[in-house]
Image 1: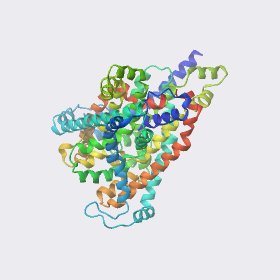
Image 2: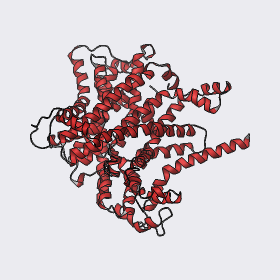
Image 3: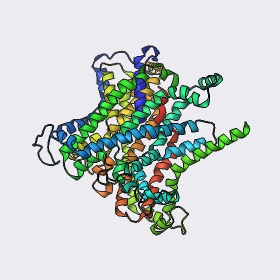
Length: 330
Length: 276
């Protein structure tokens, strides 16, 4: 989830630059059992919930992934890395990885610039901008399922609104295709993703834009910078931390996309819109190959983990130590 | 100069209107279509209904199942929020205001939860819930949702608890206030805005969750709104107008909640990006 990550980096920023940290209101080191007991007492509910429902499932998935198992009865058919070799020989699964990458690339190169563009527009003095903001953010509040059903209806071959619109615009070639044709299903899903999520990123960018001091932009325009130059050389760099958080959230979101796709296409036609999460669901809950599905979970987990660690280490690190953050975001 | 500015203003508005249309047209389409018959939907997809059929909407509103799903979703959202916020507030309290060995370790443990996609855990989670006998039990949805909500909630609350000056605590202790009483009587009331924000986030996340209720609830009497919408679409797949009416009604509580809690929701989502 959004703010979390950014707050996380902020938190680290403070730790990394002790000089700037406000004196933390922290008690002196605990003395004796009573203090330890009260710490434990406060920590236990969260810790138990977290260990049982977040960490344990991942351990279970790793374990189950080594077995050929249908989900019921004893787990006694140990196959080692068999499930994994099968996965990486499966063309459909390799396609899932490719489709995940496709969504990531489009999100970062199309959705985020669009969100940034909208944010810059709405950051100007403009009549009714509060209404526009609320409106553009509204789809984010709706559940993915409601969004998915709505757009299933819009893209219905023959009678949906999209076919009629395509007719009006002279794009008859698209009629009847949309979600029904392997060549158009992914771009169509991506349009729905933009509809649902661009407002969220727009809000992040707006918050970032409001953190940019007006004096800097004024100084730039006194120095003769045009609107584009101000955007390119002042706004964009100062928005760096927000953009990097947005990219992070887009990538993680694209990797685990499930609800939207499941309701709209269930991965079809003929696997052409299948994502990793869809494959996991199909094998785990429809085809009762729980061991194999667990292996998919583990791969999904490894991808997210490796990406998160690298991203935190090499990309967000700039925000942890850099002057950019203190200029732009505080 | 003035004419140029007007022209610029006009084109700006045109662009925003286009984006607005992209967002709004699907929603208006759904609302209007709900008043049509499915036959009319095909012949007249854009215009106003020739004859406003209120029956689609009233039929759904008269159906106990719809209300049951709303009530289930609401109950589960309240339960999730209670567990998330209670457990997080307690943990954030000690993680923010006590110095003890391993504090950063525990904090780090919670924060890595942010990186775990829910999709990863859902299959083993299902197996575990089955073992615990929590299938077809609201706790089977509430507890995992609360657990996955912890990382973000703890991060936000810890940040907030740190901003409450140490003098407040010292004064309370001088007046003979114990830790538990300080937490309960002083810290929590002072943290009300932050608690409001994290509660709103928890409610929205729970209300929209689909994956887990889909797996945990077999018995229709527990179905939540997102699962209900999907089932309804499957059941009445050819009656497009009716399906659209159903999703319009399913949107209403979420949008109404958004209208009321907008400030806190957006504040919560953007807090991290703007201030430390």
